[in-house]
Length: 145
Ligand code: CA2
Image (cartoon, rainbow, N blue to C red; front, side, top):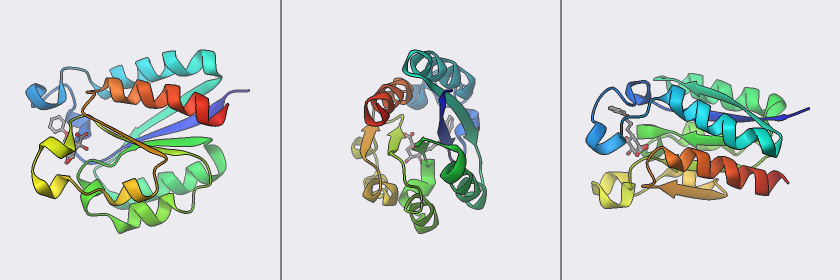
C-alpha cells in the first residue's frame, strides 16, 4: 500500500499559472499534482494536494496528516512569514516536513526572508519554480525510504 504525502498550499496559490507568470510561471496546481504523482509512484508514494486561502483550514489539514499522512510538503505562501499557528501544527506532526517556495524568497523583499515554517522543516527549496515540488517528492522518497 502506498504512503500519502500531503502537499499543502497557502493563500493565492489557487491562481498559480493564471496570474504573474513572470514570478510564478505558467504551470497550475493541477500540473504540480500530476508531476508529483509521477515522481511518487515508483517510490511508493501517493499525493494529496490541497490549497486554502484560510490559515485554520491549513492547520486542520496538518492535523489530518498526523493520522493519514507519511510526510508533508508545504508552501505556506504568505503564511510562511506570519504564522506561528502553522508552525505549531507542524510541530505536532511526526513525519518529515519539506518547505517549498516557487520563487527565491531571499532575492525578494526583506519581509519574505524569514519563514516560521523553516524552523520545523527538514529542508527548504526556494527559487526552483514549480519543479521544487517534484524535487521535494524525490527527497521524501529518501527520507521515508
Ligand atoms: O515563492 C513562493 O512560493 C511564495 O510562497 C509565494 C507566496 C509569497 O507570499 C511568498 O513570499 C513566496 C505568494 C503566493 C501567491 O501566489 C500567486 C500565484 C500566482 C499568481 C498570483 C499569486
